[in-house]
Every structure is written in C-alpha cells, then in structure tokens.
Amino acid sequence: SAAEEAVVAEESAKESADKAAAEEAATALEALLALRGCTGGGAAASKPRRSGALDAAEQRQRSFSRRYSRSFALAADEAPVEVVYEDEWLLALNKPADVSSVPRHRFEGSSMVNRAVHYLGGRSPYVVHRLDHGTSGLLLFGKTRPAAASLAAQFRERTLSKAYLATLLATHPLPDSFVVDAPIAGHPQDRLRSYVPADAAEAEALRAQEALTRFRVLERADRAALCEASPVSGRMHQIRLHAEHSGCPIAGDTQYGAGAQPHPPCARLLLHAHTLRVRHPASDEPLRLVAPLPADYREGLERFGLSGAAQPLGV
Image 1: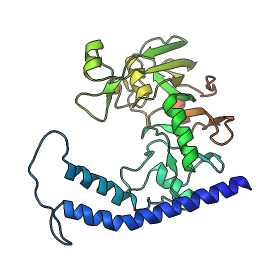
Image 2 (image 1 turned 180 degrees about the horizontal axis):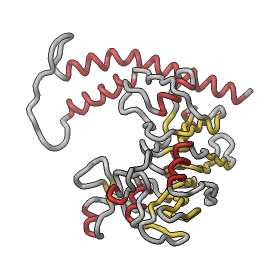
Image 3 (image 1 turned 180 degrees about the vertical axis):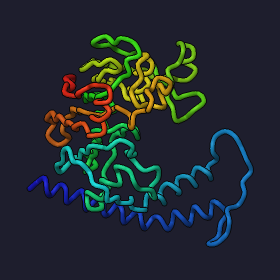
Image 4 (image 1 turned 120 degrees about the vertical axis):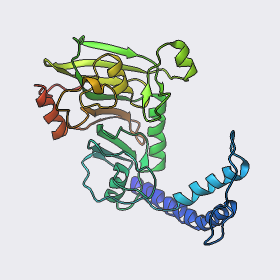
C-alpha cells in the first residue's frame, strides 16, 4: 500500500542518514581531537579561562562533539510498555511515574525513549514533547520525520488540547473551577525549578513567559480534590507550580509545596497526563488519545477517600 511504501522509504532514508553519520563520526572525532590539542593517547591541552561568547574553535569543537555523539545508536531498554495507540506514523505510550521521558545522553538508558527503541525493534522514535519524571500518562512520539514535524508544530502553536488529572491538597476550599494566570521564569537560584515572579519588575528581569492553567474540580474529599488541569501554555513544571501558586499544591509534590504534604508522604506525584487531542499528521482528522490511570495513582486517591471515577471533559 501507499502507506507501507512511505514507511519503507522513511526507514531507508533514515538508514542512509545513519550510515552517513557513522562515516562522518571518524572525521568529526579527528577534528575534535585536533581542536583539543590531542593525539591518539594524549591528554587535552589546557585552555585559559575566559568569559563571554565562545570563540570559533570552541564552537566548532562543540559542534563536532554533538555530531560524533549522534553517530551512536540509542540504547534499547527491554522494560515493557503500555501502548495507548499506534499506527504507521504515531506511537502513544502510557508512561509510568518516576521514569524519565528522554535519556540524559545517548549512552544512558532507562527512559521512555529507550523503551520505545526496544519496542520498535531498534528504531529511534521522534520526540515531540516530554513529561516530568514523576508524572505518569500519555507520551506521544512520531514514527516518521514528517509526522514528528506536524506534531511538534501543534505543540508549538498550541493547536492541540490536553488534560491532566491532578490531585490537589485542600489546604483551603477550592471553587468548582478556577484559572491560574501567572508568568513563569526559571528559578534565580535553582536551574531545576521554575518560579512565579513576585511582581512585574521581577518578571521582566527574569524574562518570565506568560502561562495559564485552567483547573476544574471533578471530585472532592476532606483533605484533597481530584481536578482536571488544562495547561494553555507549556512551561516547565507549569501545572505543579500553578497548583502551588493557588495555595493547593499537588499531593506527592516534594518540589513545589513540600511543607503542605501529608505524613507519611504519598508514594508518588499525583499528576497524570490523561487526555490529548491532536490532528493526525497524515489524515488531518482529529485524534483523541486517553491514558488510563495506573494502579499506583488509584492507590493514592484511595488514601484521600477519592474514587477517581470522574473523567476530564475538557478535551
């Protein structure tokens, strides 16, 4: 069929590109060693410290380093995957909590990308978005370059919709629905955290970006509420930070709202990427993907007397 021929052509093109990258790797490595002042077994030449922009030689060195590392195949992780949806163009997985979306570098495994590599028989998926390490739920990959480009554009242009299930600690009464509209910047002291600036002047100084999250209560209990959280923008840790900013942090979040967490603490972060609606990259038809709640999330809900029976309606 035409679809099968397209997949074969894509795989052939990718194999050719991989071969070319491997052939280029030796040249890149030689150039890298030369720029570092090395011979085959020598040590890198020391360089004087300097501030400001990188000089041309170091820029080339970094470029060669990236090209060389990309010539190595990603590790395949044999851990099982829960497939939510798959066709010739897309692969949607239900990510467990406490598994990284992507590896820190090409030589490391144990991420969802590495699991997808094994599931796809050694083929590398195209990453179009990520979930936080502690967040479970729907993680979507492209299986072809054109599909990935289409999906990435939808995320970038905010033409898709997504809904999370977030269990918020009821530190004060929550309205049935509310919106948190607060800009987000990188934390001034901790690069692993995001931050809501105190005022407009600080927001400008930290180059904060606009961020808006809609919350809707689905189920209530004395100590917590199960909410649908729909981020309009896609800033790092947005839902978690906006929940804390509202005064009701997410249960199990030791990074944002650690002081409000119950004792003993929750076994996991109670945040789950539940629903994603996109346009299919091949047909342009709407596609609604749903990742069921995992057992460990339901166990967390039971601790607060919540059933989890209500489902998001926003997408």
